[in-house]
Image: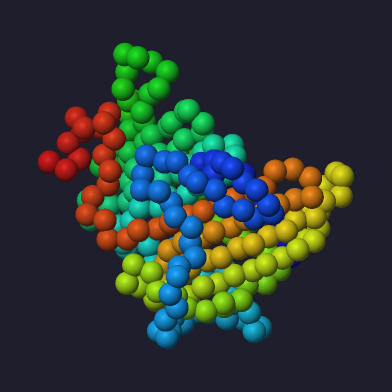
Length: 247
């Protein structure tokens, strides 16, 4: 059943035309390219199934478990309002960084050695503040993104659409296309058209998500996610240089 989409932080992809038209993105990181890839492959990627459909809950469980012992960078963008989330995790050194943007505003935090360091943007004399870490990661519901993906990927059914090759890696393509999905409790009565694609590798990591939604009333929602594993170190923010995270 459809559940209302929760608002997540991500960056504007301006210039949308048509029901699911894509647009250019801007970010200080490598541009987040659309998920579809040009070439297909005969390689197989096993996916959990239930009642003839892809089991999305188990896919997200596997994704979370696969990232539990890996270093990675997760980048998420959402179209309007202009916002993003970036999460870097260095498992070997126990360092996590989360950066979020909302329009021109940026919040940044690093968790290392049992301490949470937060950047300060409203005090020109203070670069950051510290506090003991309670084990929670700031600005996101989960490092892997699984907790945030569950509500927005809850369309009627997801099916396997094929297997593609990207960056030398075979990816299973899982998708859903829903039209005229009712929005419970909406005033006035609304329906949603959804086009969703998820790209999963053999290890169970959800490498890309491309989710697009348009309601009969209101603006379109476009959410994209990219996960990169095997990073050697996090991207250290300028204000954290003196912490000596990689000395």
